[in-house]
Length: 373
Image (cartoon, rainbow, N blue to C red; front, side):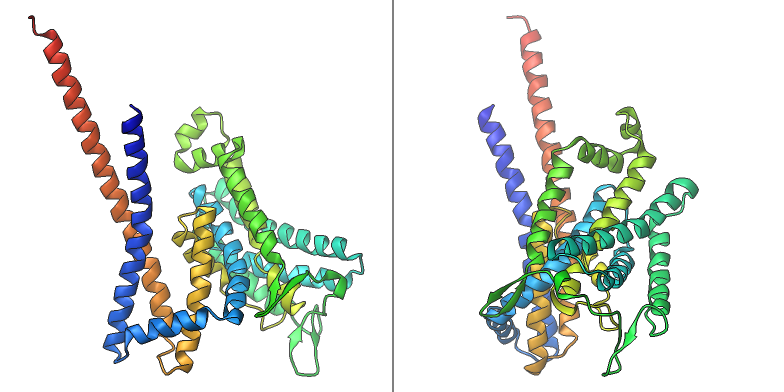
């Protein structure tokens, strides 16, 4: 019995490792073929990427970017675990960052309290913006995919309207339209390193990942969320209010999305402007898919995405086509999705075969017991 359990655990571990290994190998092979087709040496390109990506300043850049991507990935992954496709993380985090910047610039509070208020405002705005999609789904049956995409567009136009010198923004001497600067008391701390300042919001991202894992795997709420996401009928049989869980999941996902813009706002720009990063929410979808909605996997996906972004940026200066970054990122996502599906089907066939052999062995044993001596 113990041997069979250990064997089963070993097979699960191997299958779990096989998918990411297969995805990475496939992505490297396809990328190498693309580079060869463009007349470039793939081994030289990979060597350039590893060399540049391992420099001290690159490591700091990767960790800072990965912090933002990780929070975006967690926001998307939380919806995915509920079988909700929150495509609106991009609009949610931009709305949250904008209003947090506006409120933060008007306050004069002690440091810790100032930062806390800014973060809470961001989470509240993100939750409210995502909650609209949740309410539309449970009250009118509107798909969250459609509603969140539309809310992204509304967020873009609403921010464009408010980010105006005659409304909630200023025009500085360089002609940049931005919200007023957040006072020093509202700045988050950074770690001084040889490669540059490492954003302290990295620690908040770690705490968010631990909370994500604990909340979904060690609490009744996490069980209810996963049950409702897997089957409505099973959830109802367990006494779970599915409609309430949908709204709750969207609110929490939106609150997590509200944190996405905080590393940039509180550790770098200290204001919301036309140059504030956009599209991070869609990157979060890719990162969540890479990490299979697991907090550790999402962290690996965020680091990988940030590394590719940094390393391929250097390739352009080395004479390689700038589109190679998009090719590599797209191939990796596609390879991961395909690899996990292939491994899942292989594991399912192995399980069915094992169950079939066990049933056959039990049938033979029963037949032998019934035959008279």
